Image 1 (tube, helix red, strand yellow):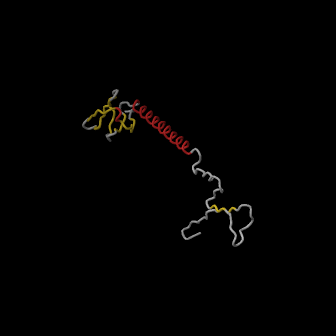
Image 2 (cartoon, helix red, strand yellow):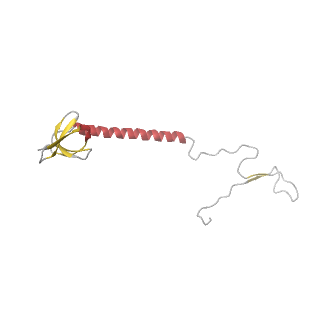
Image 3 (spheres, one colour):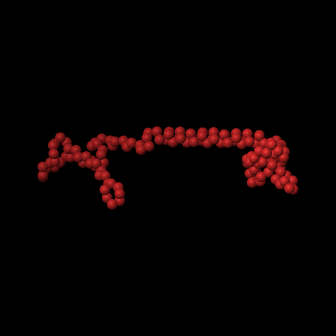
Length: 142
């Protein structure tokens, strides 16, 4: 281990000799083959294994497809809840519009809603039905 906190590993080396045992005597020539990268003498290099597996691209596509399908179904659920909320609007419901206006429903039309926003001056505004963000309270008992 060195001062940097990681170990340095040596590259494996293979020393091959043709049929003779041990190193050659001093002054004699050697026909030894030294291979420092792990390949076989005269052969092809070993195949390197893919670190992500053989089907990495296929797995990536399946994960991407799964994310798209899940996002589609979650959006569908939210649209269904919103449509149910807008269909259930009735007189005297307290609502909040996308513009941040609080009001009480006075009249519900097919594409518009009339809201009373001020009790003292009887101020009414007409907004699109789709601009209703949420029903804040139900005052149907009044």
